[in-house]
Image (cartoon, rainbow, N blue to C red; front, side, top):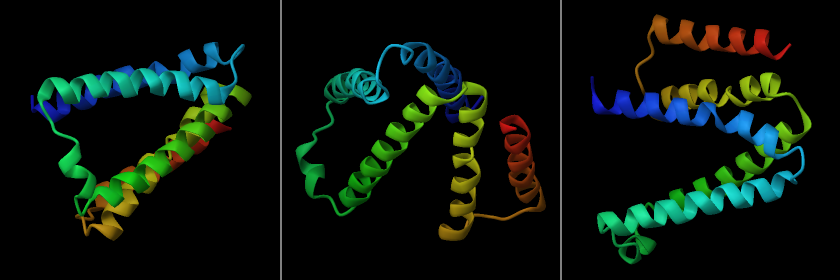
Length: 138
């Protein structure tokens, strides 16, 4: 199996537990606090990984692509704050599929913005994803 497939499956399995755990945690915690605490764990852990791998941070602060990373950080913050809040207010079985539309939007952006290959199979998969999400969210 290709390494990226193994990592994708692991990411899927790990991330699949996030929404249910958040739903439980946010019965007594504000969603913004849940974002802060969970991402504090992530920040510290990733910092340790960066240090362990010996990746210097400073040279990349002025890298020409750093603004993309910073913009992504802003969008990730907005996405997580709103996702966590939606999970605090609504059922996991509805919030997660709607949130999952990011897969469809990202796929379409890849096709439009990065000139990725368009095949009937990909278009069918995107369309069926939208149908599946719509059916799960009703």
